[in-house]
Length: 233
Image (tube, rainbow, N blue to C red; front, side):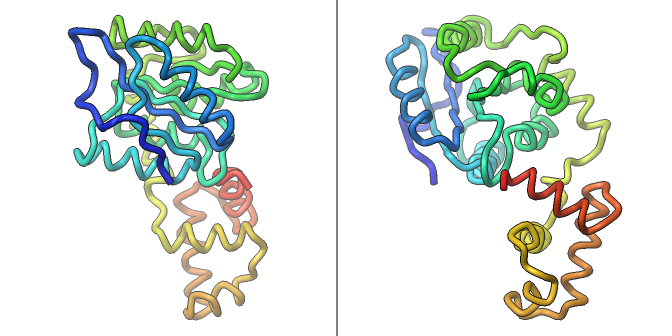
């Protein structure tokens, strides 16, 4: 479920240097606190928020399709239910080579640097690092970009690398495959899933086999383990 903070804007206001920000955090208290703080900063417009990674990615796809305008800065929690910030970033970066993505976390940020950089983020900071957060937003407002330091890459470079690595499985899995994997993650057997979905057990096996192939793993166990991590269970 999204929380609309301001009417959808048409991107950066180049005259005033206002930056359009998206904020995603599955901790509703932290989300509301950050929104309240950031709304008091000059030149910041929070266009929309989400507290579920999967909903946030669906919302982003609406922006990408032109239903809504793309933000200037995408800020996402690293660890979320529905879809992790890392997996969401990789899926976004596959198609977008311009928008900076900033990861935020309640944990020690450095432990996420490698995975976040690999997924196309430009930085990771702690949720309590408000001065750093403000500086990053002001930098994007002033320049339209975010300077990066290793191991992070600029959006365009990360986009090219991820395109060369191939379609992220988040984008290639069908809705049926995602549904079956999610039910497996919750402990349902293939027979249970077949009964709930009113299909044959062989159909469930086919979904899992296809999903495993798309995810680059060799077994159901590996596919379910990877999917469980992806959706934050």
